[in-house]
Length: 114
Image (cartoon, rainbow, N blue to C red; front, side):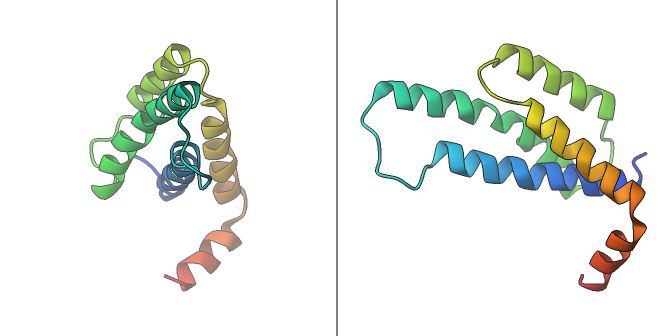
């Protein structure tokens, strides 16, 4: 079972992954006719598989979520889609978990706004 801080860190990871996919896969600039750009966007969109499972578990408050399985799948995707920088997702998760575990005042302040 996950702690409240772990759940918060996974939801933070989901948020940043979705922002990243939006920016990489639907750039705000003019639509490209370059097939190389299409390929890059396709490869970047494959990273969305990290977020889809996480979104499903987040919607169910992480019932039956298996952290070991998640990170094993994550590592497999990182190896398979080596051109996509997956490492920053892991770093974002660990940084947020460290913030939540190390500074309870931030957590309490955030709860006052919900």
